[in-house]
Image 1 (cartoon, rainbow over the protein chains, first blue to last red):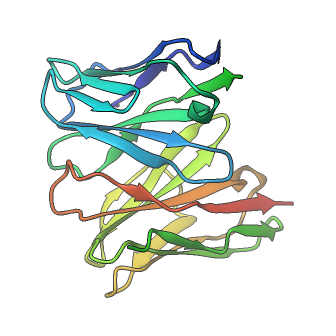
Image 2 (cartoon, chains in turn green, cyan):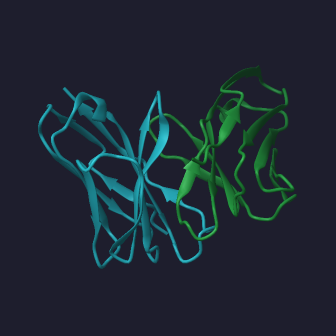
Length: 111
Length: 114
């Protein structure tokens, strides 16, 4: 069974702090997506990474795909209250068209 | 470009009833996936349809079923509802041609079972 473990599960930080969320698996994924979900809404796609070692930046968010394509991280610089939400990683394996979702990281940024 | 649309947004049913949820994907997307999201279990995959055929299935009982129409719209049906079926049901669409193409989600249907 493929599993994606995210850590930490919960994170409460002050505005302006930096943080990193991790997404780990023993399986190899052909691609990995990161989503943010706010209450009452569906997850919103932030980024897709497909190449081992790939790094993508989205404003203050930096995403990295592990060299072996088994893990990924999301780093937020100078967090803002608008970053509050549930962060989910999701991986796909080649040819399966099936997305395995991580356990989620609930982030709260205090003003 | 219109996003993924799910109807209804909220639904209240009683045990033993059945329910049908609807999902309209992004125009041009041929793959539709359904997920159940609960606080305890997170996002769990139900099934995926591509060109009217179920291509993938999760580990849910046969009470959960779905279908996809020729215009890629999809419906999900749950029969003999149980209290534990209370959840947010999310639909996601993608192009579906390659397995690494990202999914885009609707805002879900919140189903409450009394």
